[in-house]
Image (cartoon, rainbow, N blue to C red):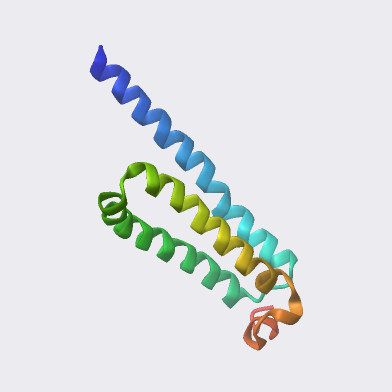
Length: 108
């Protein structure tokens, strides 16, 4: 019975993780399209997101071993929040984007 409850907890956790992360793959390109990003930039945003996910997957065990699970679970969201605030203006303000992101897409 203990094995069954542990398996159920694991499956619920995976369900919540996938359910929470899945809209990112759908809503981010839609919002980027509404903001006028060219197709190449939208593709790069998705690629960089998953490259960051891979890098985090590879780096997280070493960070948890070195700092401990409590400190690591506090530090990871803080680093993500700081990165989001740092990049927000750069990604949302049209004047702050690089010239390549403002260029019209040849695919339109």
